[in-house]
Length: 383
Ligand SMILES: *Cc1c(COP(=O)(O)O)cnc(C)c1O
Image (cartoon, rainbow, N blue to C red):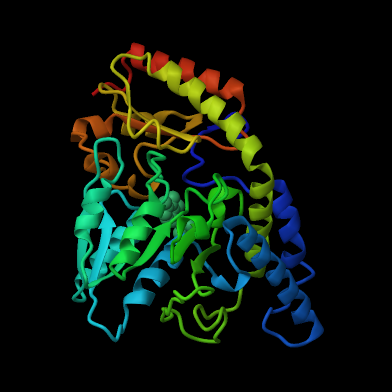
């Protein structure tokens, strides 16, 4: 796979070598159970504690406000179902956005079959939520509003702080899916003023199958959740099951590395993204999907109106990019995110997502530019 050019970091990232190194002892010699009271178990518990501190440092919370899970999908399920299940009051309304990740949208759709009411807000053509729309959607019976920080397909950054403030004004809780933001940009749960926040280690050079949920408990707004997984009572009884120690240690290390390298990473990655974007936009009628101003530095989503992007992604052997979101690309459906931004099916089917990360070389970017020009000018993969 040496000659594979990987520009799909929003789908997943490679494990950082330092992360693997930190994990190795817990995959080999230190196999104890963090819940065991003997010294062997205690040493493991200490490693988990250290990781919890590293995660808390990165997102600016107390270590006890973090629950380790199997990833963002589980965190989102725990957050939404956990706050809504068996509420004593009669608040049964949720506010979310049409461009959310399926992990949020599918939980909402499920809850609709259980008697909850969900408002799916539209977005503007640039992918941003209109704050006034959000304000109007909130009601006295709104239990929870959930809006992602950074969109996985376009990189568009929503004004979370403002939205959280509005939600709190009507007594609703506010959650954010920050899976594409944590580790790439500064994320402080206090600055954002969110009550719940989901993230996943493999999106920032940690291992797959581990993530976390921030649950605010240090202020007057202590959040009460019901678990969705019951058993041994781990993680303050909120997520039972033997801890994924190696994974948790890896996520802690990935958090520490991201914190240390964030500025340097952002600078070099954004340069490469901009180089690619500028060159590709010169191709006939190409346009960017998503706000240029409110967008994360590592991704560009571009529509080439005459291109069959699905064919291209399937057949280009040495470039790993994405058409729409990876999670939905098994099914040939136009991206729900691009459709919500007002693209026609045709325009959405011509969209490619290039997402960058730490190990991308500028020579790879040059190669991709040449390839794309060639493909489009020779009218390969035209519709
Ligand atoms: C990847 C992703 C998820 C899901 O993460 P998992 O690790 O697959 O559970 C959720 N939301 C966003 C925005 C993502 O990018």
